[in-house]
Amino acid sequence: MAARQAHQFVAVLDFGAQYGQLIARRVRDLHVYSELVPCDIPADELAAMNPAAIILSGGPASVYAEDAPDMDAHIFELGIPVLGFCYGQQIMAVKLGGSVGHTEKGEYGPAQLGRAGHSRLLADTPAVQTVWMSHRDAVKEVPAGFSIVASTDVCPVAAMECAERNLYATQFHPEVRHTENGRAMLENFLFRICGLEPTWTMDGIIEQKVAEIRAQVGDGRVILGLSGGVDSSVVAALVHRAIGDQLICVFVNHGMLRKGEPELVEQVFCGEFDVPLVHVHAEERYSALLAGVTDPEEKRRRIGTEFWKVFFEEAEKIGGVEFMAQGTIYPDIIESGARKTGGKASTIKSHHNLIPFPEGVHFDLVEPLDHFFKDEVRELGVALGLPEAMVYRQPFPGPGLAIRIIGEVTPEKLGILKEADAVVREELDAYNAALFEETGDRNSEHSCWQYFAVLPDIKSVGVMGDERTYRRPVIVRAVESSDAMTADWAKLPYEVLARISGRIVSEVDGVNRVVYDITPKPPATIEWE
Image (cartoon, rainbow, N blue to C red; front, side, top):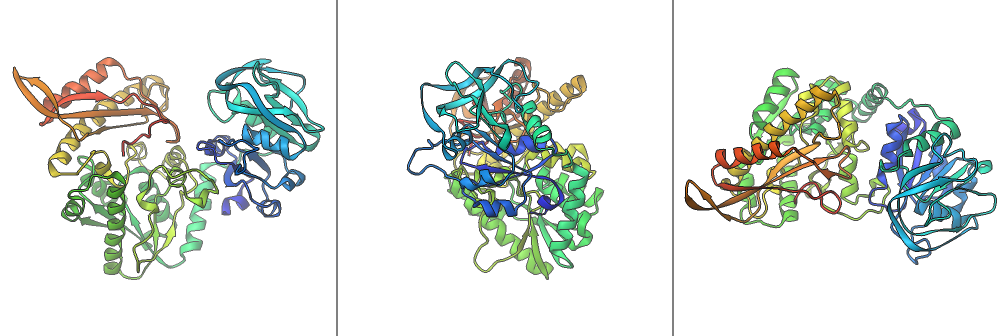
């Protein structure tokens, strides 16, 4: 990847932890470029990538399991500083002559860590501090040359290091925010131990990405699926900056967009940005396609496949299109189990922009955001000059309201959900705006990161106007997150929830009940389907 040449690079070896990708995110928070690579990459291949530092992720397996993720022990001989977390510490110990065993009891969640002696990794952090643990196995015997620099009541080797060889490891997880001084530990490793500089900034990223797009596309024409969402909007702005009118945006209106969205897309991109835009009205086409379909993956498959068909038709009309730009971002790839990350995470749900082209269709893909997390995409949008109202819009899945309607998608259900969702967004937009005005922090601990309505495939009894009703309930989903990898339900004030409920029941015909989803991710996902 070009960023490796343009910036100092930290390689994160992925041992299969579903949320190990957060390590790469935390490194980037400190303005150092990082990227996931397969854990079994050969040492010479990794050395050729020229990383300035290596981090070993956690993982769910036991190091002694028959099918446990493995690594090339020669990586420890490259002379590159290495930091391991959890499974990363355990495999470091085993590969270098130490041992791992079962602790008397597992250690999950917050734990009190006590430092022991001098530590470069834990320098300037408290002698006793809270860290986040998630393990049953732990290092029993450290390799020769290593010192134990921290422990807990359950885990005698909570952190170890061999400063002479620049090898460091912790049983706990510095990458999660529940580890109080995790950021300080990463700063110690990146800046004090490795001597890196925080040079990975948005201005530099734009310059680099523009150059990459121009080099890839040349004089070719590019077609982009523009939904008006954050990802596709940022891609549109970035690609348009790079190649101007060689870009043609195609807005496929499948009829499952949020209330007022088609009008907004045209207003912003035709009126404000003067980007070439083709508006394809495919509402009836998609309605027929989804008739009778209830399985969520089948909905996604049909919508994704039809998306490519529509694009192929439009590209033929336009003529001479060689490239397709997409708003694929890192969580899309991770959750689809794609090997582009080098990871081994299982597939959770498919994404429309990762489904293969239909037979006979081919475009070279332009995916400038495929290694960016959602909040990084927003930062990039601001730096590109997009209006904040667009940059901080709600995330919205490609299949649209089809996967927020449980069961078959019908015109009646679409009408109900569009109106209910509009109420949720209007009320929580106002709530977030008030918090921002009060705190000046768009990501304050009480603000909502994503919020929407869901329509389940059931009806419930109610009483309205002294009469019995049998109508649909609406589920409100509001979460706090920064990157979509983990999320917690938003602790909204009761008066806000009451206002949302009251408005939906009184303003949306066909609804007599509103419920609030209070499940975090994991175990749930943010979307219902």
